[in-house]
Length: 160
Image (cartoon, rainbow, N blue to C red; front, side, top):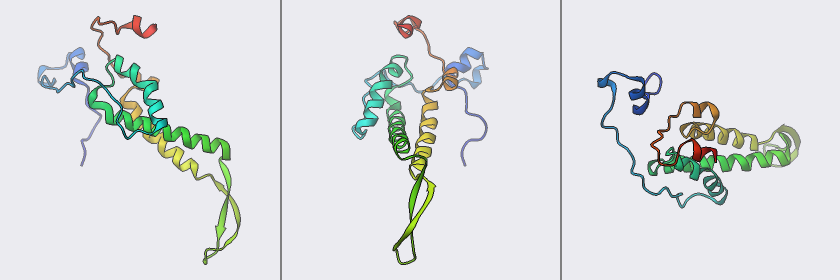
């Protein structure tokens, strides 16, 4: 069984809130500031998503070398979502579906929900789940704290 209750606060947030010393993990592992590179398994559309978002997320230290797989999964979900949305836009939400008899012979058609909507819903759910970890919606972003250490990544850089 997984952990119960709300997700724990990040260590940096515990320090800012002035939590008791015994509740602060002083040995929390931190990723090196190494290069962040897209994995080779990303498809062309997912790679476009990566190139669109990764530079900004890396610049504000939200995307690190430890986060590559999770972010790549988000890029993949976003690309699949775009593809499914394109199909729904072209075909419509309601389509004619074939009807077969018990022998497998085509007997007619019926109106029904476009199967691409299932793919769209699944990709949406995955994109939301992974995107929340990287602050990719306004409400998720409100929960992130980014330290400003005077290295040119402050408000001036973000506003330029």
